[in-house]
Image (cartoon, rainbow, N blue to C red; front, side, top):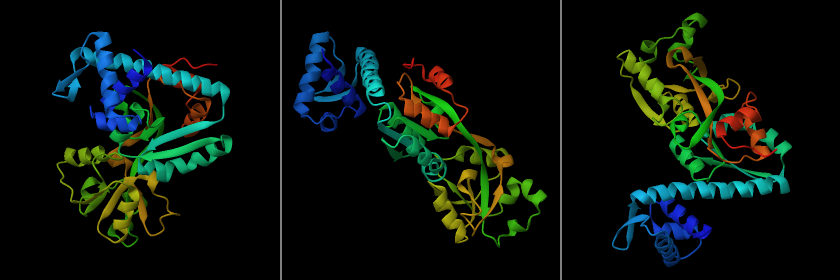
Length: 315
């Protein structure tokens, strides 16, 4: 058995047992992948994959155990490469950041420019997606880390670190009736008052939407949600054309950047949320990744990052 066979098996599993797709990713032929898998099974003396005719349908019971071992072996091989790069090229490499649109648009612009000043030879890439997509990117090593509020903390194989806390903000046009509230009234705005108007907010997979639904449900209120969107910019656009009131992440509202809207903090209605950074467990982290993490959340130190990721870093 050899590393090439391990790569072929791992990629076949990652591509939902589609040999054509696996061979495309691996830049080889489908017969070559199939042959390597059969040779591996013959050498091991067990069937790793269940088959229907010539098609692979899934993993056998022993195959599932083999797949876990292969994943650990390949992760350590990748870690060896990272260790080598760390000492040969300490300030060079790449950093792929998985993020939602909210993080890409409103949070990361505060971090990435400073990171680039410190590490000009590191190539930074943003990979946007839903929280569940971002989790898969990190697990499949298509991204080095991910930033999101939902999902990450509940995904097996990921460790997550707190990045920053935030609350929702209600956004309305300047001439909206809610802008006539006094500051005290605005601080104590109720769900009943909000529900008097059509609501525009996030898709159910994004940015604290579950807490919005739960808050209304707890009061027995069925809000008139007329539009769901993936990002705050779209929500603000439709608030601007007076289609309804918007509920967005507070980080996405800035009176200087959004002069045509008025924001009313509503954390007391929908609670506080924590955006988290997700990393694959057992991954070796380059020095510049530690630096990036500390820029995102200054309270994160190398020691407490290592204790969570559970990999002994090289000093």
